[in-house]
Image 1 (cartoon, rainbow, N blue to C red):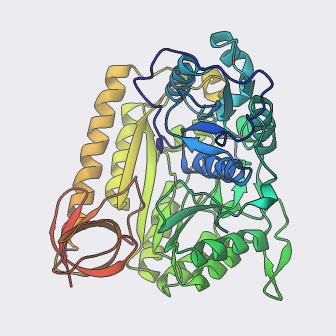
Image 2: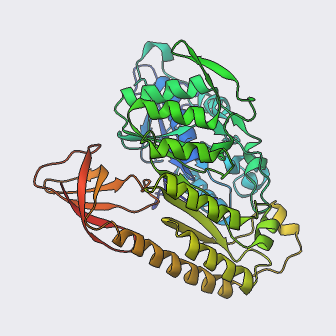
Image 3: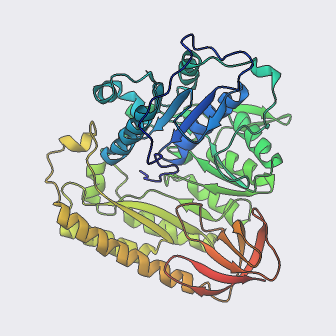
Length: 466
């Protein structure tokens, strides 16, 4: 579960509607048709947006930052939580107030009836990953001005991330059936991409200047299960569509490789060896969600967290620099004070490096709604959330304090004449901490430099270029 808003609904829209050519054809000699785009949700949705935008640009459409005057608006929605749906509906409403042709896609697009109940004049609605349907709707709204094969695009396509890092989506959907989650209903079961296809995309990104690949999917460590780990040909050799093999191959490209949304299946242990050898970043993003066996059972999650603690200890013996981040849910229905205390005790022992938490929010259609468990009152949810985050913050502060005096490799995200902001190997963009840097020489975005850590707070580090 994640609530990482990579793009917010644009605010303060004007109230007029645009008019378009009644034949939906660009006027000869006129400027290229313009599309306004809103992307909401997690990094997996961002990759969907990148694919759509790449196709739009390939066909000669231009992107505009405002709905007013655009030939159509595309809203890529998130529908995971009710709060996410509310944000998506607000974005749709803002687009509708400005533009007569709004195309809705993404996770909430799977709920066409509820969208049309609020906005019956929506031009088109498609579900998640429905790239062809989105483009068909765009063509109906305003035809492309030319043959897509007559124009050039960057080989890596259009990216919404900075040039020096990119998300690499390796699969769609999920085979898990967590009781709080509706992702399988929205995006279906696991569908892995052929490994050669993933590796070719990764090579293209690296050739275009990407310094960090962020590997994402709904369940990254399940990669290839649906393909029965089938081999495919890459550079005249066969590679298995398996989590370890993919990580090993990506680690040979000479850039940072960061693994997100990794379920702790037994075979994850093998990848720790690659991290210890410096092949991929010593970073694991594992959605543990809770530690109480009763709560995990209700969530339909793996429940033996004692064994998980032992695995974490072994991982750190193999790879002492390993950074583990996770997210947890507090206030799940039926969660008792004893359950919550178990969670705090587990967190104190696990000493995870980066931790986030969410107060449980019921999702329409999720099995958790039908478990018959007593809801946790909002004020108790708030209290537990504060207690959890205070403990997580203290753990983070202690671990970062231990980095003072050390030298860390840092990738630069923002650069000025004498200062810069970057991230260590233990920090993913947007969700983890930052390294604030002083430098006697100008640094460039995308540089990877050695930084001596001088100070630390609960989440961030400060240092000087060594």
